[in-house]
Length: 64
Image (cartoon, rainbow, N blue to C red; front, side, top):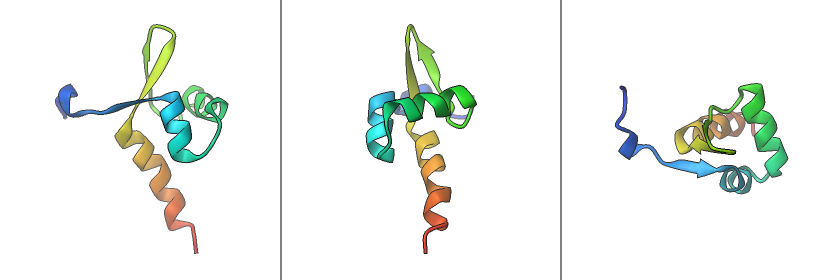
């Protein structure tokens, strides 16, 4: 395994939505479309913080 799971920080859909400043439905759409990797725990999803950072970073280079 590339990284120990104890080093990975997982975020809820609501936390990701707040960070990205979008609705929770947009985050769910991104997860279902495969744009954001997620792990399903029961009926909820958890998204690795590193995946959110990767999703946001390309958008920052387009600004300007």
